[in-house]
Length: 424
Image (tube, rainbow, N blue to C red; front, side):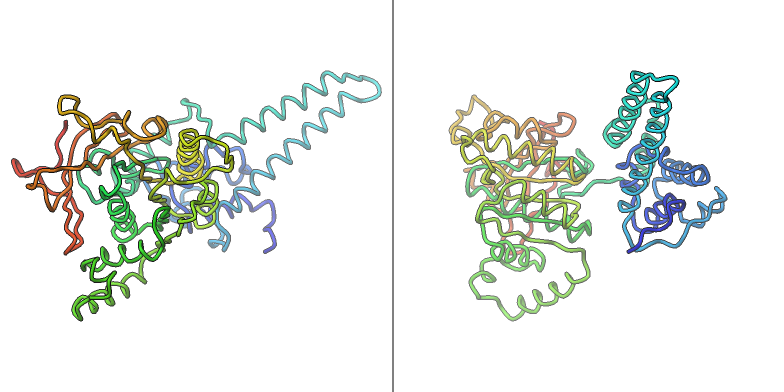
């Protein structure tokens, strides 16, 4: 596709943003008013102010009416395409100007190499700062960002990806872009079922494109679990080929309904991929959330790393390169140490220090939820989940249904007052 004339790049970017982008895309771009030409600035200012006031991007016709700048029809390329060329145009313009000014200092009559060097150094410094504007924020310019976040929260458009467990959703506001959330437990405690529930809820209820990576199972095994959850039919008969005709009909209908949702990609990571491979896949697929079952098994390019260093490095990659770097939510499952289940009653329940291999898991996670083994027969059919850490330091408990007939892993209400959860 031939690039549109440079004079219209700003308008093309705004048209692409309003046609197929989101307020999150605008905020993620950072302060970019300097990229626009003079006749485009008023339109861009209106777009930013409208988002701050109402929590949503305006219609192109509204922008034209209020700014006097008509926008072209939404182009076929994404907004990021035009933003890249806007930045390149600005860099070229600044470099050309600084080289011209430097050359004037190097003229035959008034040679001043140091002044020429200062001119070039200053231009490079400005460009480097501007290139990091998406990460570098000046509080004096934060008015529109703060109001945008408030308006989105008020309208519900800035809500994170819900878990389907009201206690956690009320505590966290859902999983937000940049979050690393961790589900922790000993083997056979149900971490995979919890991860499958979370991924299915994000895809089906939240209507989000979702990537689910299984490091401990085959893709088919996870797809069978997803199918049972989705159709509300028992998993065992589905896996063993013993479905009743009624359940088979329900499954077929449910799978037809699935065609109308965004993609739910399942990746067979049974060969233990690296975090880098998952990051690359997320770049290509652009999901809103990535769920990684068995993250402690992910490999690292440095095969000489000891296990605890490998897991720590993987955790850092999932937080900073995947969740924050790709502006998405990442949910991963990890193991408790053996000592977590050998604690004496007077020692209390397991904590962050009982997570195997890496302190980084607790440090990097916005949420750490633990599935605890219980020997009390009264708890058959449910699981206790301890919140060891919330985004703002919260702790608490909730109880989850553990119903393999109806495939229901939703949250149980408190029996004493009808509310959910309960702070520890």
